[in-house]
View 1 (cartoon, rainbow over the protein chains, first blue to last red):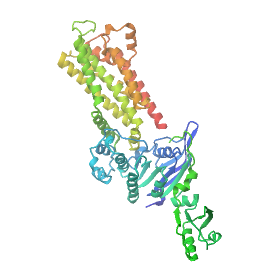
View 2 (view 1 turned 60 degrees about the horizontal axis):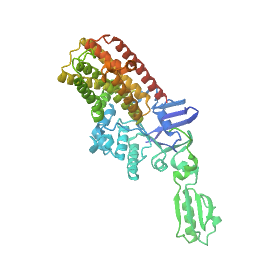
View 3 (view 1 turned 180 degrees about the horizontal axis):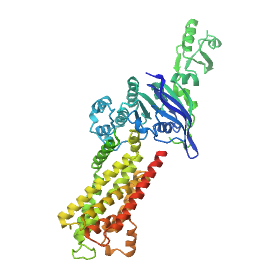
View 4 (view 1 turned 90 degrees about the vertical axis):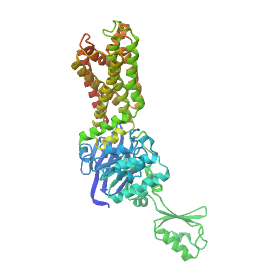
Length: 308
Length: 250
């Protein structure tokens, strides 16, 4: 359950520069205990650098970070086991076996190894070397390692990169399951469908800054109109009247078909008007705006040479 | 988890992983043994260009070659590969101290050097009847200093190289001339004065001499070489620590 009075991560004014390039610029973030928080942005937006600073892997140039109330750089020892992490571009030694990896990373907070193997469908791979695992099994092992010590907060960076669609769905289900365990998840991704499906709240990054934040539906409503109806208007209907219906934001006629944008409840009002008019067009098409449609203009081009 | 428990567990895991790398094992364990056997047998036992029996000279020299093979070829590649593949970052996020992996690798390197040296000693003793060390305590102390010094040289190279391929390239490039000129190749009196003065600038020469002199009762007793190895150890530990700190700040 999300507890809005209990922030587990608080970031104020986080700034990181490489030479003259500012890759993270005055970032403020608050993540509440128990939520799945998405950090969304194009490649090069500064997401990975931000979460690396949050985990104490990089020293920031300015700003304050509190992770479970502690400074991740100077109080790393106190955070061991309380924070789980799946890093981008981070492998394991090729010949390290699954069971050995779990034993190597287990602290006294760890769940029993057999239980972890079973939870993540790796029981049959206990003695398999890392290099001999399939891509999906490697990702499952990374998630298993990230969650091994029953952390309070877990960072998952581009978890589904390189996975086929079926494997992505499996990983999504695993992440959703974390919410039920009460684990806070920070999900770093450039896949907008992933963020839309999984995240309670999202911060959108572009060029090192947070450019918008909110729930997926808030972002969609803020950045555009969430619903669109397209149909061939019956001759009996007055198109200007459609524009006066509740929730309708705009009406346009394109190629003989009318396109109506508006809020989600607009669909009901237009539908009712069509029914009242006595003719429901056979080609009526309703679609909900996806997060991707809404955010694409916001994300812009990645910073040239920006470090991830 | 206690830092020392974590370190012990990491060292044990790394040691197991080394024994799963057949090429590394072949190079650090069997290459010195095979060369000792060949060179110990090709020279006339009465050849007085060695200051000792040729089989004793090479047998003891190849203890140094084994130490050099571990420090220059195994350690740098392992360190650079782990950094390149993000394994080091994974260790860090798992709560391991930044020094944990370098220290574990140092421990593995020391253990592997001891195993490799023991193999050379056992083989030479069995085949040629290796002479007992003239000064056993000093030989052991100097050999241990050489091992730690070369293991930290390996760490320093590994920390400076951007990836495993360059670490392997530099390590191999350094190792071969060092072992050929430093005492593992032609007999000392077959080297030209220029070659000998180049050899004096090569760290592995001092490893071999620091062990040969007290073992075979040669002039010098190994003290100067031991001091040079201590200096190499201090500089390389300093370099690896500096690079580690710099990476952390990145």
